[in-house]
Image (cartoon, rainbow, N blue to C red; front, side):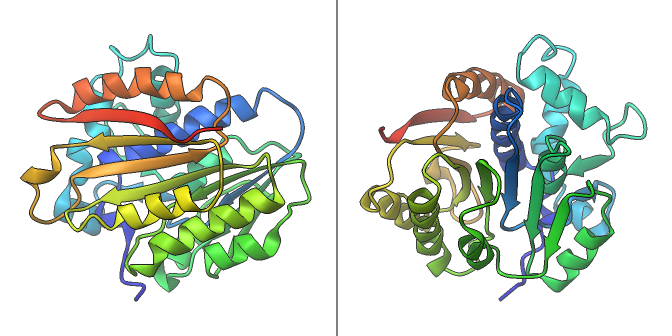
Length: 281
């Protein structure tokens, strides 16, 4: 279909959930000097001006990153949220929140000279925007199917692999395709770290993904869900955001639990966060 454009949703609560999880993993990866290949299977544009026409139509960032930005001084003592807000500040032209960086930007911040960054985007308009973004020299941009491209690139040439998978899920089959891709990665790169984002919608399609992961035989998968409101309160639209992390570095689950509890307080209302080991080691 290729109708989805993330600019309409940039900086929403799901972006906060996703990119805080990515940030937590990256900080652990940088503790060792060995090279990493980072792969973003659905990269999007890379950087989103919040005053863009698309973003202003829904203004979802007001109930996401804007809540954390307003509270950033109170969050400075949080070992994860403090540095995350500092990084976010580097793309603002002033103290006012003007831009939100997408996953290619967050991944690029961890990209050292010995690392690689592979970005896939299939939407022609989004790929054009991505091409214009300033990113490290070791970045490769692919106008291609990210899941197929990832599977074809296995195993990577570097000792370590970190993958972010966050499709639009426009097609129902994508839920199962993501689980199949995770299984392929785990079979060829046993110590890879894979982060999977999924939407919580009234249709409940995310259970296709969760059930397929459980049946796949993949081990050590942590699950985190950030809800704006209970599912029963939603008749349409996304009521929550989900993350699966395959092979999370030691301590990331606890750190995210602590920081997301503070995110919930910033979001207010009926927001909640829950987590569990979806598939234990």
